[in-house]
Image (cartoon, rainbow, N blue to C red):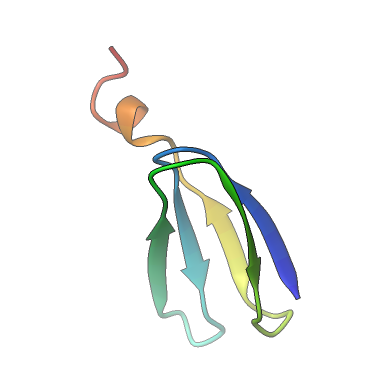
Length: 55
């Protein structure tokens, strides 16, 4: 089982073995446990505030 701690407004990209992907985000900091196979990749994306100019 994959585990990850989400930061507030942080997007996480989930990549499947076939190359397809999706995004998960939360509006608060939380612990998330994914019941996914081990060959799934999790990529942490820059916070939304940094993507929008980081003011």
